[in-house]
Image 1 (cartoon, rainbow, N blue to C red):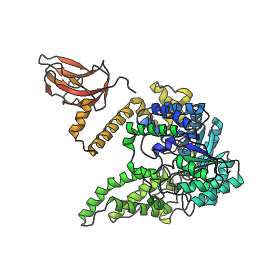
Image 2: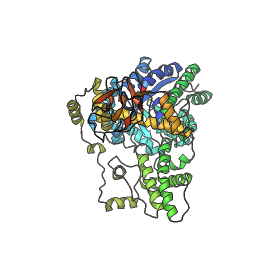
Image 3: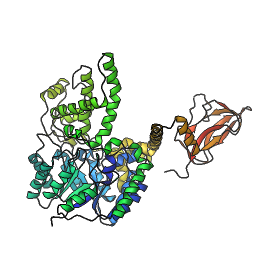
Image 4: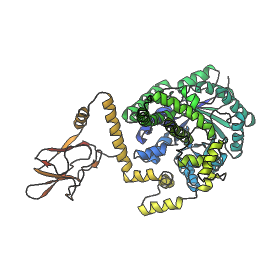
Length: 591
C-alpha cells in the first residue's frame, strides 16, 4: 500500500471561482456540520482572498462569518486554512507591514489554523515576512509557488524558491496551479525535487480543472510524494473550479494510495444544501461558463475564474469596435473572433511583460493590456498606448521582481515617460498605517472589536468597511440582487409587467389616508425624490406626507417593517383617499 493522501475541501474557492459572492454566515453554519459528517476532509478552506471583501460588499460582517465557519471545524480537529496574498494581504494592492502583522493575530484568534501565502510574482521578499508574522501569531505558514508554464518557470526555478521559503521557516509548500496549466510531468518532478531534500515538508497541491490537466497532475504529484490534495464537491466542482473529491478519491484508491472513505449520505446532503444556497441568491452572480472546461485556456494561461469577467469585457467593447469597423466598411467581429484575438494578444504581451505568473492581480494586468492592445490595433493604432498605473507599478518593479526580462520596447516606453525602475523591497513603499485607522475608529466611536478584528477590517478594506458601517453596501447589494432577479425573469420570458405583479403579490400597499398632494419629505419642496427601491422603513417612521385641501400635511406611516419594492406616484402628484402610493415587502427582522 502506498502513502496516505489527505483531502482539503476548498469551500471558499469553490464559490470564488464560480461567481461573485460567498455564502452568508448563517449558511456557513448550516454547511459546516455536513462537511464534518462527510468524514473525509483533513482540512477546509474557510476564508481569505476575496472572502472578507465580498462579505463587506453585501453588507455582512466578515468576522462573524469566519468565526461561525471555523468554530465547528476547530472543535472536531479539522484544520482550517485561508488564502493570503502576501504583500497584498487580503486585497488587490499592497498592505502596510503593521496591518499585515495584525492580520495573523486576528485570524488565529478567529480560529484559522493555516495561512496559504503567495506572491503573484513568486518574489520571496513578499512572502518571507508573512511567514515570520504567521509563526509569531501561532499560525502555520504554508508558502506557495504560483505555477504557470513558460520558458522561465522550470523545475529549477521553483525548487530554488522553495529552498528559500523552507529556510525562512515554512513547514509546508503549496503548488498553487491557479490556472490549471501546470504540466503533470513537470509538477511531479517539482514535488520529487522538494521531497528529496526535505521529506519532512508537507506538500499540498491546488489545481484548477479549467484546461483539463488537473486529474493527471494530481496523480503525478501523489506518485512523487505530495501529501494533501485540494478538492471541490458538487454542484461546484469541475469547470473552472477543482476536481470533485469523489473522482479524486476513486482514482487514488485504485492507484494504491491510502485515502479516506466518504460518507455518501452526508455528501448528498451537503450537495443539496449548497444547491439551496445557489438558488437562494448566490446563483444570480455565477457565470454559467464557469461550469465549462476549456482547452483554449492552455494557450493564454489565464485562470479559468477570469473567463466570466473577460467575456463581460469583450461584450463591453464589441459594440464600439464593430461600430468603428462598420464606419470603415469593414467586416464586424463576433465574440469568438475577439476571444481568439485576445488570447493571441495575451500570448504576445505576456513574455514582453516579463512572464508574471497569471494569478491575481497580475493576470488582470496582463489581460487588460492585451485587451487595450486589441482595441487599438483594430483601429490601426499602436500597441502599448493604454497601460494603467497598477500595471506600470508591476513593470517598474514596485510590486516585486518579474521572473523574466522585460522586452526592450517596454523599457524604452517607460524611459520615454520618465518612469524609473526599482529593485528595492516592495514593502518599503508602504509605511505603517494602523495609527491612522485607530484615529478614524476613535473619531467615529467605533469599537475595535474582539482581538482588534474591526480595526483590522477597516485597515485592510477601508472603503468597503466604511460602506458596510454606513449601510450603503447592504443597500447597493439589495439593488444589485433585485436587478439580477429581474434580468433572470426577463430572460425566462417574463415581461416587466409580469415582474411588477409578482413583486406586488409578495408586498403590501401603502395607501393615501386623505385626498391631496404627495410630498416625500418634510421640506415639501418640489425637488424631493421618492424612496429608492430596497429602502427600509420601520413602523414608527413616516413614509410620506399628503398636503390636504385645508393646508395641512398629514403623515402617512409605514405601519410595519419592510422594504420598498415599487413606488407608484411621483413627487407632487395628486391622489385620492385610498390610492396606492407604494408597495412594501414586509420583513420582520433586518439582517
